[in-house]
Length: 119
Image 1 (cartoon, rainbow, N blue to C red):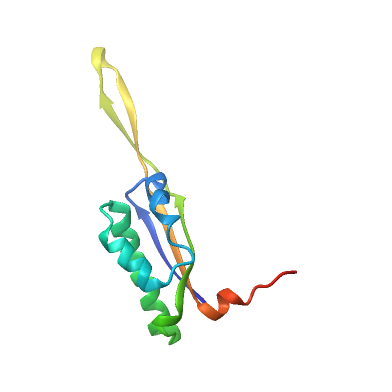
Image 2: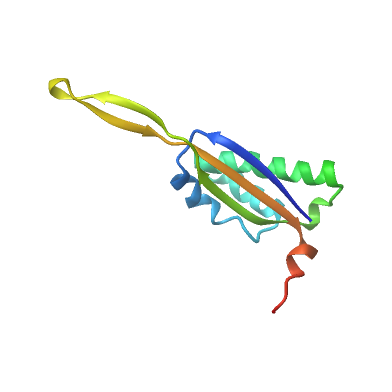
């Protein structure tokens, strides 16, 4: 069984989230939450909240045990960019893209992770 939590339009660049997010898949939920709580990155704080939400969804909606949960997938997709301009010399303006992300964390049970075999 896989349960997911999605956070959309998060005001952080997907590139910055992907630096942290590649550390998560395959880890047990408690280990991942401990690691995220001590990282000094904005992306780590955001991922911590989304991971806690996915765990809460698994516990409350599907009655899954927290001890058996592992992070099966985590990814950050590109959201819409807000376009702004900064003034430059001689009446010019340079564009600034304020990027957003759609972040998804999928947790599953240990048994569902081990089911896949060789074909």
